[in-house]
Each structure stands twice: as structure tokens, then as C-alpha cells.
Image (cartoon, rainbow, N blue to C red; front, side):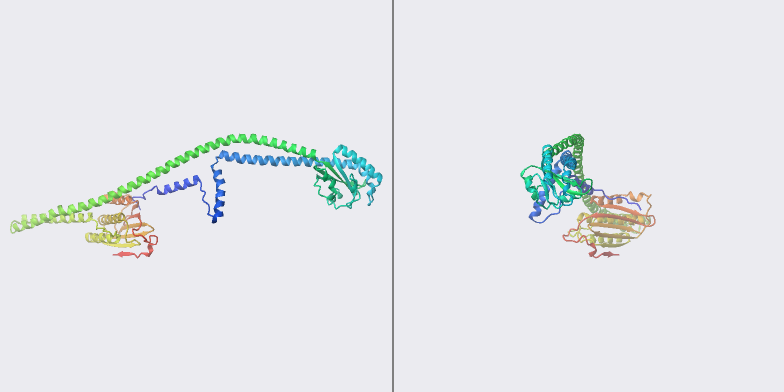
Amino acid sequence: MEPVVGKVSTADEADRHIRHADSSLRGSEGKPETSGTFGAFVRAAGARPRRWWSRRSLFEQFALLSSLVLSLSVAAVGGWVGNRIADGVLRGTSGAAALYMTNFVEPYVQSMDGGGTLSAEDIRRLDGVTELLKSRRHVASVKIWARDGTIVYSTQKALIGRRFTATDLTPSLQGEIRAGMADLQDDDSEFERSLSKPLYEMFLPLYKNETERIVAVAEIYEDAGALLRDQASAIRGAWLVVGSVGLVTLLALFVVVHRGSTTIKRQRSAIKQRFREKVLLHRKNDILKSETEDALRTAARIDDLVHTRLGAELHDGPAQLISFALLRIEGLEQELDGRTPKARALLTEFRSALQDALKELRAIAADLFLPDLGDSGDLAQMLRKIIRAHECRAASVVDFEMTGVPERLPRDAVRCVVRVTQEALNNAFKHSGSHRQTVMVNYCAGTLRLSVRDHGCGFSGTSAKPLSGLGIIGMASRVRALGGTFSVISNLGQGTEISCELHVRSSIAGTDDEHPQDAQPIKSD
């Protein structure tokens, strides 16, 4: 099997791919529509930041994002460092306070073992200890709690003997040393609230001598101003160190990213420019292709006119002269009647030759003529006329079948199909050695396909002679002029098939091109 002419390439599909690539390059902002005024407002509000962000260069996007990340990192690291420092200070302070209480306070609360109370002497000695503690450690107040929540000692004497619900004592009654910023929301913290300054509090368990039995809990309030100042200083230091290191790192990255962004921007501009040039080139190619096809169609019409005129000239000129010569020969035969047999035989030979020449001229003229298209553009009617003329002239039988073809088609397509059918039937008669041919025409989804098959000897793929004639070249040229495809398929001993495809539309508005199966097939034997 050997196709003669392949499918004619067009720039339409490539142009569609390029347009699709262009839309991908620019980006698509199409989103599903949200119904209502509120949906329109939401789309507009969301589209503005996206448009603003998309207009920023890669360097600007990197600078904004990295600056935001650095700021958040500095704030997080500074806060974490400050909290760690505050926790460390509180642990150290509570440890020192626990040691101080063990050495100086526990000896004066031993009488509380078993539910006892403090004596006046114990309270006097505790006053001395707390005064010393206030002078050295910025202590605001001291309280000693019994296990039942009763304050047995306080620097605020009005609280001694009062009982409160103190849930903060529970961990310390189990041996835990607790320290933290005081919230001062309890009823026993009225004095501390009146100081109007930040305080941190510590709960320290007090033990029975040489035992693990807790007899009371000491609560100490200290001024937290120094602690908060140290914490703020640590946070600022962390911010400074982390910010400086991050800023230096970002500056180094900014240089690299700026160079990369500049390169990408330059390359993108070059790609867009090349893309525009390619689009323009494709458009020019489409224009040239359209002009070429128009020129080929015009040439085909002119060729049909030339054929028609040539057929008319042959019919009205040489054919008439030969007919006149035949008439004169008949008159000459009558004048020579009874004369020499040699002269009579010569006249008979002349008359036979002229009759054959007249027959050939009339056949040539008939081939050059196309049936009149009129205004109908009826392809079936035209093909029937061509087939009947061929059957009469070549004494052949042509099987004809047409399926799904609309009643009216573009005149150029009708001329092309009729001429290809006429030439293909002539080629089959001259070269195939068969007196039976098949013509099939079908139409589906805007594609008109013609197939002319003979049942003759065929030819092999290595034989180029059948493919080099003017008939094959002319048929292929006609089909290409309408943007179609043309092929010749032949196998030795299996006949030859000439086929073509044209992309056309019905000339009748409303014709259902997508469902050709609804049309009834036309068959002619």
C-alpha cells in the first residue's frame, strides 16, 4: 500500500497550541462565578491582592516574604529567650529562698507540728527574720500558712488567724516549691494589690526537723521590677543578635535572588517577544496559506472554464471540419462510383480514419465538459451524469453508493469531487484492465470522503509510472486547493483505490451535519 499524497499540513492546530501556551504564560484568573452581589464583592476583594502580588517581581516577592519570616522569627526567639531567662531567675530565686527558709524560718514553726500554733516568741523572732529579708531581697510581704488554710503568720498582722481557701497551697503541701508571677486576685492579697507594682510569689514547704513531714507553707512576695527589666533586656538582646544575623543573611540572599530575578525577567521578556514573533509568523503563514488556497481554487475554476472552452472549440471547430470532410468524401464516392477499385478502397480508408478521429474528438470534448451545476449544487445528480457517460463510453459497470451527503454542498467541493471521480474512472478504464468500478461517497461530521476503486491488476509500490501521470497530479492538486487530503492505495493483483477527503459544510442552514446516519443511502448499479 502506497499513499501518493499525504495530508496537507496547516498552521491552524499549531496556532491553537501557541494560543493555549500564551494563556498559560500570562496566567489565568478565571474562577467559578459566585452568584449574587456578595459573591461579586468577594471575588473583587480577593482578586486585588492576587493581582498586586502577581505584578511583583520574584525579587520583590522574596524580599517581602523573607522580611516577614525574619520579623516573626526574631519576635518568637526573643520571647522564648526572655521566658527562659525569667524561668531561670525564678528557679534560682526560689532555691535561694528555700535555703534561707530552711535555715532561718523552719526553727520557729516547729510548734505547729500536730496542729499547734505559733507562740508570741516565735512570732517576734519571725518578725526579725522577715525584716532582714525585706531589707536584703526586696521582699514585699511574707505569709505562713497552716495546712488547713489558716494564716498563722503575716507581715500584715490583720491577716493572722484568718482562714482562706487557698488552692495554690496544695502542690507545696506535697513538697513542691512553686514560683511565678502573682495574679493578686485572692482575698488575702489586698495589701499586695495596693502596692500597684508587679510581684512574683513563691510557695515554700516548711518541714518538721529531721523529717519529711510538712508542718506549714511559707508564701513570699518579691518585687518583680528587676526581673522584668532583665527579661526585657534579654529579649532586646536576642532580637538584636537574631535580627543582625538574619539581616546579614538576607542581604547576601538578596544579592543572589536579585541577580536570578533579573535574569529570569530578561529571559521571560525574550520568550514573550519570541512568542509574539511566532504568533505573527503563524498568522502570516495562515494568510499566505489562505491566499494560496484561494489562488488554487481560482486556478481550478479557470481550468474548468478552459476545459469547457476547449471542449466547445474542439466540438465546433475540428469536429465540424471533419464532419464536413466526411460529407465531401461521400460525395466523392458517388462521383467515383464504378471507377477503379483502388481509388474506392483509398476513399473508404480515409473515411474510416476521419470517423475514428471524429469519435475521439467528440469523446475528448465530452470529457472536457462538466454537467451544468445550475443553482442546486446537487452532488448526487452530477455524479450520476458522469457515471452514466462513463458507462456508455467505456462499456463499464460502475457501482455507486452515497451515504449521508446533504442535498447542497459548496460548488467548489462539488466540482472537485466530480472532476476527481471523472479522472479516476478514466484512469481505471485505461490502466486497470477491469470493466467494473465502485464509487462511494459519504459525509460525516463535516468531512466529505470519496473513494473510487477498481477490480483490476493494480501495481506494486516500486512502480512509479501510474503515479507520475498528469491525471494523478491534477487530482491531488484539486484536492489540496480545498485543504483536503488525497491518496492512492494499490496492491499488485488486488486493484487500486483513489480516495480523497474534504472538510466542508452543508450549504443549507439547519442541515444536521453531525448525524449523517439519518440520511438514506443512495445506491446505483
